[in-house]
Image 1 (tube, each protein chain N blue to C red):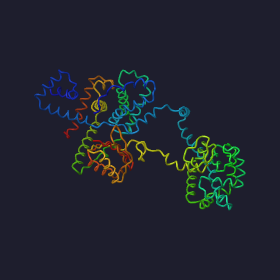
Image 2: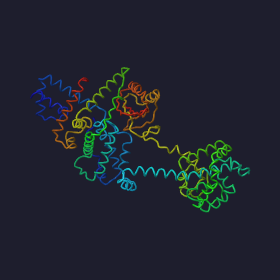
Image 3: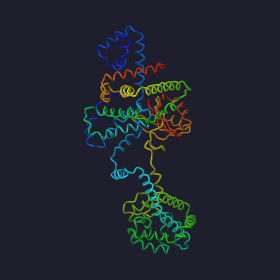
Image 4: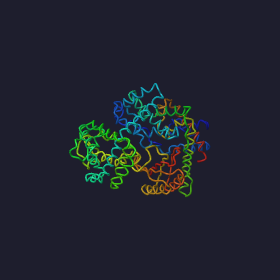
Length: 184
Length: 381
């Protein structure tokens, strides 16, 4: 899990609003992994994730003048990323590119390799289980347990009540637990 | 509190998000319910697993791509886009027309140059006079000497030098010190006329003559010249070369430096310089100086945890070579070493199997049809 979302880099927002191109670059550098991470965990495809992540930053770039600064920049980006991912997942013509598993098959031959293969199998099962979660539950789980956001930050990013966040997270985790019981 | 009510609190317990009252009730129930304790242990294990997943990193070059995409489009492209918008099929046709037109212009401008150069070589090779014999063995730095030695050329050139065209100014500047080098355009027309007048014979025999002439040149010079010509013919570089032409003595030492505006070098020398410069200007991948793979997200992103990073790096490179691949790059990303490899799809499984013997491997990958997979391995302790 990533470290929790901290405060915005000092002085970044005014420079972004002023249209400082260097500030935008710093902005992308600071949040690229978080935004790409959410997109990849939600969409399961690196090319599609990069496309969405890029769109997140471009939208932020266009809308920075309207950003009132009531939320953190990071939360705002997570909000844009979440919305774009859910929209993409809901689009009827979305191509599902899930060829990852074929490339992750690691046959074991030595003790070390056996352990590595077991870990890889668990990893693959975990990812598959996450991918099978309903989109709204998966999003909350990713934001909480992978990206390290608090309930309040998730609620803010998704415009949800914190109680809804808590219950969705609970359901997502219980569903995962059932799918991963054979690894217990 | 029932078992169901208790289990509804497990997730919040994992986040330490229970109120004191909820926590007390939960603890009380767990104390007397082994089934719920097992359930809780299972859920906590699941949460731990999810949280232990490696954080994902954006692909190399992502920042550059985003920053570039955020740049405002130049007014020309905006204008073009607006103009084209009502006719969605027109841009393709227009692009094709422009491309064909551009190629035609380049060929039209390029061929007289090449033909004239061939003619010059032929003259130099055939001329029995001593000055031509001197000119012939010269390398590409000085072939125009033959041009100036030829009576017809002399006439044309002296006329032309009064106003060399921008497009031809490079060629006109020979080693001849008397040459007026900063005259503009009539010379171009005259030179073209000179090149096109003997059309019938020149066109039909130029390549044979060129070969014949080149056989009389010293081998390196001939090769150099052929290469330069090919370069010019292939790329229509004449159109570019003259743009930086102007006046100056033809100093051989200036060949490899971009000529300053207003300075000229002999055309063949320029061509040689271009031929030599081409490999240097070939685009390099952003993923590393050694890579031949275009800057794109790798097909496979892996993380390798080992005791000794440098040893593992060597082993990975050797492993890639063993399975028919190679190292394509090396970089430091967030303080961690990233080894970039190209691995044949056919031997990828073997590569992964042996890589797993080096340490703990975790892999994220993407479906691809490429026969050679781009693999980025982050090696850390």
